[in-house]
Length: 429
Image (cartoon, rainbow, N blue to C red):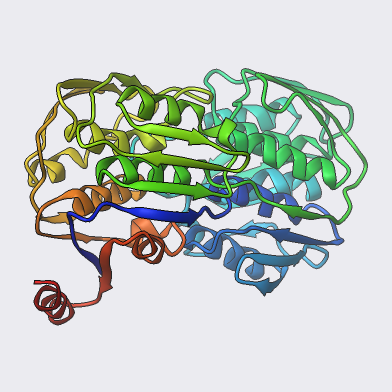
């Protein structure tokens, strides 16, 4: 499967943002920590979510789809704490089942995670945290095996800010006896969302969204109904789509506060950004200005938005410098942009971008999820026809991506073979 598109149309209109994938993965894991039923709304219909739900079904969780974006879960009949199916190795957040199962059953065996190849994402902070709660936690036979007789609260200092470790250790410690403190915790909106979900199930978590999270262990959790926050990265991607196509896009169902780092860079580049209660309008300008950006943990500029801003800077007037401080392997898409005429030099973790007036269409390959989405934005701004291959990466994290783009006037389709691509070329000229 690939995307094929004809660029040059300014994107105009409104787009509704789906639930946050990264919050949903932690929230689904939290839902199985009670024997009661849990209903989750605003669940994005993307591949990573489907994979996690399949893995849960295999261990005995009852999964009932109550709508395209809602699910009812019951973890009362889990028959094994060994999660080892072939799918779970393909996604990063399978490891949240470690914290959830360790907290509930005092034992967990979960296959080592996969996901996008954007740099090393070690799980040593997760293991260190489990050990601080009294568990043994080791990697054996390609699995993480964690075990404990009495899970007791502890003091955990994370050596680096890690969203995954913060969420996993919250999950494990809500059912531990005593108090747990997580210092140097991640402050991302999805960490707060998982904490709010756990609290709605009867957990006692304070300080989520700051760098110190305090948890008082409770005996058990109960059922709840919970709605996931909007996806900050999907919203940011469409905001940059407006900028690179010189369009006028209103993103709906967003929390503007979560978007501040992204909005401020768009303003700096000369776009018009108007905030409403739950929407943001971005108006692109004929000429974008350049800026410098460094990716940082929240509330800094998100690493997951780095490829999208690079596409915008590659079409801006002047020189921009992008410093990637989170993942070391995140500039693999730069060679693809070069095929379209972009002028970007990468040295180590810094990209120096000299803006060009336009891109021209090319045949591209998506190297990972966010870079794949950024290449689609580049194609929509380019003259002529662009194809993007390996779109399985993009489908991991964007719901109905091409349909939402079509709703804004993009000329884009998913094709399965060269014959379909040829038809598209003939039709759009």
